[in-house]
Picture 1 (tube, rainbow, N blue to C red):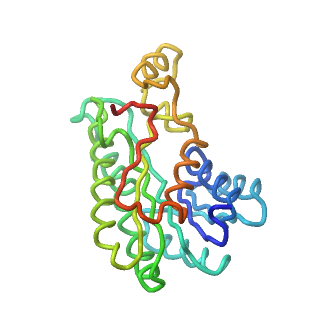
Picture 2: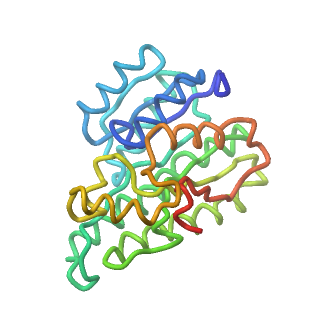
Length: 248
């Protein structure tokens, strides 16, 4: 019960790593608002977790939706202690000059602008209560980038730098900011990273991970639970790699 009495929001919580984080948080005593653009997916996860979970449909690139998301958490559960900025998207591997402007704008909005918008709403609340944790989902792509994913890589490098800067600025207010760097995992985004999901492509990708497997939602849930718990009260500004040794 490491998160007992904590109230959390998990964006992109209807699938993949976000769903794994939501499950772990509820198992550890938190009450969780699952925010997802796919309302049905969010509702399915919330229903599976019982009374301590609730879902709302949110477009994290719209400030009005982000404000409504935070209001919903406070109205439903009575406050907010943890924000997990997990929602994200990628693009198919391709030469950098082939990514069209519309796709670039989407990556910017979902992977970067959403964190800015969430901070606009959440940071004043956490400053006022003199505490809280913001966890941003970055990626090994921001540390050890692979070719043909340049704009996705760059967006995750931005997340790591933003996390560190936010951590320094918010530390005097008792607010911690941390990030996770997963390697590709068994999530809906796996095919996007590999270009195609075949046994051959999986074997090629796994050969770059010393522990020999992909990240799982449970792996990210366990790491997020620790970083967002009081056990990690002296940890801020880190981007923890959950990557089986991929970045070594």
